Length: 439
Image (cartoon, rainbow, N blue to C red; front, side, top):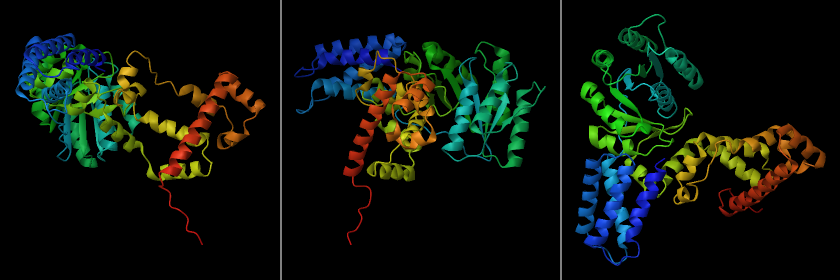
């Protein structure tokens, strides 16, 4: 995400590195390159110009502290202005009400149905709410079955009415059903519509008017660039939505929509979709996004994701096993599963400061663990629990069963042993396990 924009802004800011002071000339040169980078990212010219004018005014209005280089100060200013442009701070979703009603709107193909399920999963797992999904898209043939499949996958009920072509009536009946069952939140998925389709726009306006939702979210495909901003404005003029959701932010997006949609419609970006998995949904934090655009990583989000998967009891159990040299392939496999739940590997690596530069042109596949999982899967339960038992004949059988070579298997076994030794040293040195008292 934002790889092209990040590299161009980084190149622009490089102009000031090594300079002893900020001057009209070097600042003008820098902001000119920043403006070009924003235009290439599909930010409209008026917004790009206003942004860089503010950066220039801020830069010329500040004194450079002796310990801070001009280049560092310019990074700080650009970070501050990017954060303001995207909304300054995260805005929470409103789920007050019994039930709280969330209406989902957007263009065809923007990812509304998938987002509806992701949001249901988020509210269920992270907010502890009882959720019901409503299949309100009565036009797209596969929409209802898609929502039912996703609902089953995340364990959330989906309300449907076969043969009913009135989305307003379907949604009202679903709300009554939710009330009778004590469900906290009702998420109404609706049909995709074009802003120029007056009949369909009348329908979404009627849904908003009749349901009186606590939250109306506009879902937009971030890969559509500046067109997404124009569409958001048209929808907002009609239904006055409460927030924006950017989907497919993990794709080859130039980033213009993420940067300027908040500024254009004056509505906060509340969520971003960052992958296909149901867990691949993040609350939008403007300051963290600015960090990532400027190549500064996003350690806070990385830690938050790790904490969501962190099991303290399991961690102490693993630590104890490491110290007593009992850590095995089953333990390793469970930790791999936890890492995979955190999101795509490329996204996770991009959150580590500086790593985005090292991996910018490197293809990082989410299937990286598959060969290892295949090797461990080809072992017997005894072999998984006793790594030291693997002799030549066992290795040959495991290699044949997993479709890898003996060399691949030996390489993995060496890496596993090296990792085990390193983790054992760390576990011993951090002193977390209680010491036994001497008698």
